Image 1 (cartoon, rainbow, N blue to C red):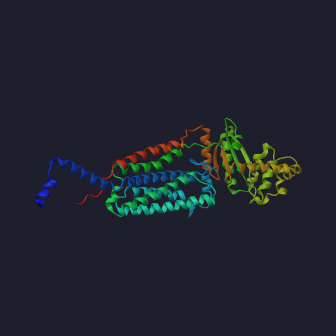
Image 2: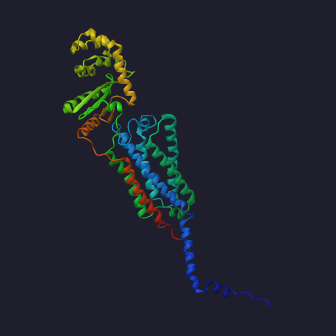
Image 3: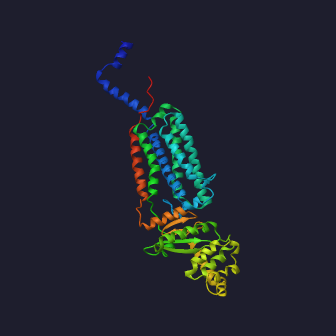
Length: 423
C-alpha cells in the first residue's frame, strides 16, 4: 500500500505548527536582517573610520604648515634647518603665488565635511572622486620632494600620506556600495558619530593654532650658542651692505639696541653675496675698522650708494670716521688676513644652513629676511625669559583622543541612517 502525499493544508500546518519553534525562527529572521544591515562585513565600516582619521590628520598637518609658512622667521613646528624649509623654499611650494598649505587646508576641511554627511551613493561617489584625486596629487608631491627638492618635509609627508590613505579608503567604500543607496547609508556616520567627527575636524585646526602660541623653539646651532652671553639677549645678524633688505633692517636693529641698551648683546656677521660686486670690499672695510668704530662704519656703509663700494673710495672712511691712517686702512682692506675673516663668517653662515639675507638669530629664534615685527616680538619674548612650551606630542595626543571617541561612535552606532527595509 502506498502512502498518500500530504495535502497543501497539512503541509502549511506543518511549517507553522509547533509554537515552541517560533522564538527560534524569530531569532533567525532577526539575524538575517542584521546580516543585511551589516553588509558583507566590518571592512567597509573600518574603511569609513580610516578615511575620517586620515582626513583629520591631513587637516591638522596642513594647519601647522599654514602657520609656519606665515611665520617663516620663527616657525612653531619646523626648524629653518629642516626639510620643511627646503621644501618651502623650492619652486614647488606655491601655485600662482599661493602657498600649497593654504590650498590644502580648506580642501581637506571640505572633504571631511562631505565625508561626514555622505548618506547616498552619489555622495560617496563624489567623495571617492575628490579623495582619489587628492591622493594622486599627493603621490606626485612626494615624488617632487624625493627627486627634485632632495629633502622631505615631515608635515608635508603627513598630509600626503593621509591623502593617499583617505583616497584609497573612499574608493573602497564606493566600490562596495555599488551605487546602492541602502548600502551607502550603512557606511555613513550617524548621529553622535557625525558630531564627534565634526569636533575632531575643528580640533585639527584649533589645536595647531593654540600650540603655535607656545612653540618649542629648537636649539640654535652650536656656532650660534657659542657666541651668546649669559644674562643678555644675543642678536646675531648676517648681513651684506649691498643687500636692500639688510639696509632696511639696519634702523630696526639700531632702534632695538638703543631701546634695550645693555640687555642686548649684538654681533654683526659678514656674508657678502657673489652677485653683489661691492659687498666684499664693503665687508672688508667694516672688518678693518676698530671694534669701537664698527657701528659707525656700518651706518656709513648702509647709507652709501653701492657703486661707491670700491677700495679707493672706501678708504676715505678712514679720515671721515677717524679710523686711523688712510694708508694703513687701505692696506688692511687688501690684506689676505682680512679676506680670511670675511671667509670665516661666510663659512659659518653655510654651516648653520643660513636661508637668505638678512638672517638674524635672537638667542635661539631665527628671523629670516626683513621681518621687523617678528624681530621685535622675538626680542621682547626673550627679554621676558623662558616661555611655556607645549610639546607637539601632546597636541597629537589631544587630537588622537577625540579621534578615538569619534571612531568608537562610528563603530557602535551603525545602521541608524539605513534606508527602511522593503517588504
